[in-house]
Amino acid sequence: MSGQSGAMAIRSSFTALLIVATALSLAASNFAAAAEAESVALASVEPLTARKQAKGTKAMAQTPHVKAQLDGFIHEYHPSATKSALTLVLLHGSGGDEAMLLPLAREAAPGAALLAVRGRVVQDGVTRWYRRVTPVRFDQDDIRGEADAFATFMRKASAAYGLAPANTVFVGYSNGANLVAALALLHPALVQRAALLRSMPVLEKPPVAALAAADFLVVAGKDDGLYARYAPTLERLLRKNGARVEAHQIAAGHGLDRMDADLVAGWLATGQAVSMK
Image 1 (cartoon, rainbow, N blue to C red):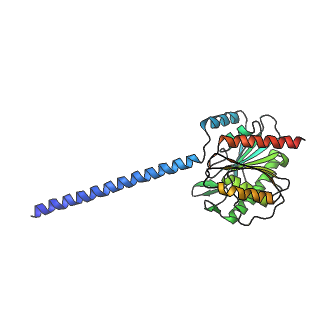
Image 2 (cartoon, helix red, strand yellow):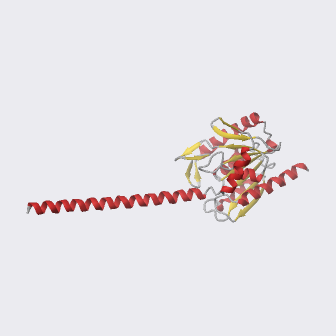
């Protein structure tokens, strides 16, 4: 009897171990599937095609550029390849860096000088321009603090690289576009022209700003479940403060699309034609 009891105990222990091993295997499989799904979701936020990236990389390789850090802002400055007076200041989306918008900028404004900047905030391992509370609620003190810091950075960078405010255009995507919109309200003299791609208003108590001399391009994605519904509010806010706003809604989600580059190019061309009259 004791031998049979021992054998039964061994079989029971083995069965228990097998059940635990199976559960652990299933948990590992589920974790891997979740990680893969998250990776796919993050990849969809940065839909620049390989062709666009290759084209942008080739253009950048033809122009020597400076990579530096100023007041904590890592950035790259690419001088104009054609002696263009135009400079685009590029602000990436969440999880991006200073290289994120270079391909789009090269398509929209070939030959323009480019100042591509990386946000200073890292939250949960993600590079951002300010801290967030939820995907659509943000740390108000951090927004204002980072906007002030970026305004100081721009004044120093403009002096260092010889940038003229009248020929400087901000191009922001998502989190970066939100910072530009806040910057325009907090430092209206700094932002005269800006393209805001997939943006929303982030200041809960926006100040009154003198934006009568400012021009904005606002491009929303029709299928953007995150920000599309906030685009009209942003447009009204900018117009309320006197700005001229050209607004478009395109057949796209939150990610960038070829139409974004085309719209930015057309908007820039219209502005240059007006300035020459």
